[in-house]
Amino acid sequence: MKKDFLKKGFTLIELIMIIVILGVLAVVAVPKYFDLSTGANTAAEKGVVGGVRAGIQTYFAQNKAFPATLDSASSAACSATNICFGTVLGQGAITSDWTKASATTYTGPAGTTYTYTAATGDFK
Image 1: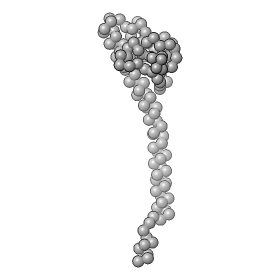
Image 2: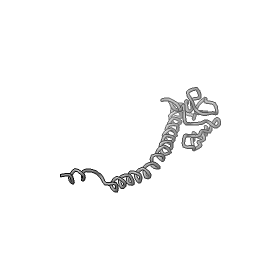
Image 3: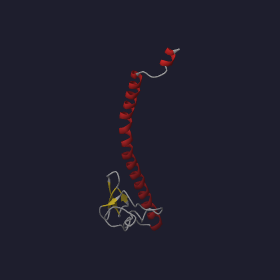
Image 4: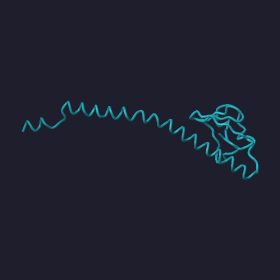
């Protein structure tokens, strides 16, 4: 009977193997987790760019001309008081993560720079 009681548990080798397996899983999973934030920023930026492009086309359909500017924001980081893309995004403009470098140049959260050309309506 005493021998059965002593056999109820994990050996040291079993515990070490579990710790090693968990360590390997952590080493594989952690870089993937950090890469998700980069992918999320890129996807969010592409979504905003698509919305801006659609807004430009909607503006053109309503006014028969492309907007002269995409907003009245100053050249700085977009914020609640410096709203970017207000002319073409009717459902709410961008208030963070974007920067306006000049009257026609913007930088997204993933670091890509876009330029608006009023003559053609291009936002590239």
